[in-house]
Length: 226
Image 1: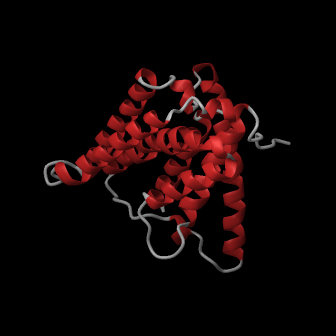
Image 2: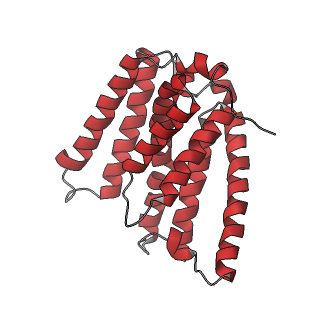
Image 3: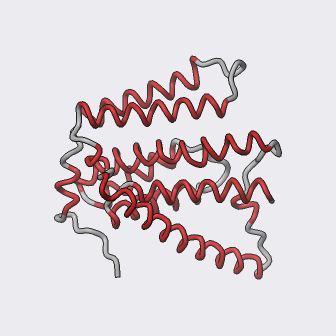
């Protein structure tokens, strides 16, 4: 049985590697890129998805550069290179388990007369080229950027004050920055909690990155083919 690590365990040492100055610098540059994406770049000249992809790629590069040059290396945000493939393998296992749970949950809803598809289906263009771009940017690049910031940076920094604090802060901010419709943003809340717990349990950021990528791609494919 897998248990969450104690607040007195290895996470204390790991969280101390993320300094306040690194957190502030990353936060300022992330917000600057978001501002450039939404205010400066004319959306009439470029595909909004391409603009989003360029912004997320720039954010990934900036986070890498900051933690390498001014921080204590990629290990401080959960990217210990020897554990990369271990993290991917664990992410696949977690994703398979949650996929089964979601499948059985949808079966239950279906048999009680509730159509679960509208709960997860998103507006989707029928253009195959747009779909491929969406998979590459929204399904792969965006999850990498988001996990680097919300789990690698935010969760990692606030973990020094305990699991609950790090979980609440990272999940709350993760939910806030995602567009929300009417009602409770269940998918964002559940996703934020799952990604944080997976990172906590496995100790490598590649696990929530893998889960996030597979989850987004699955939602996009269901929405497209449905």
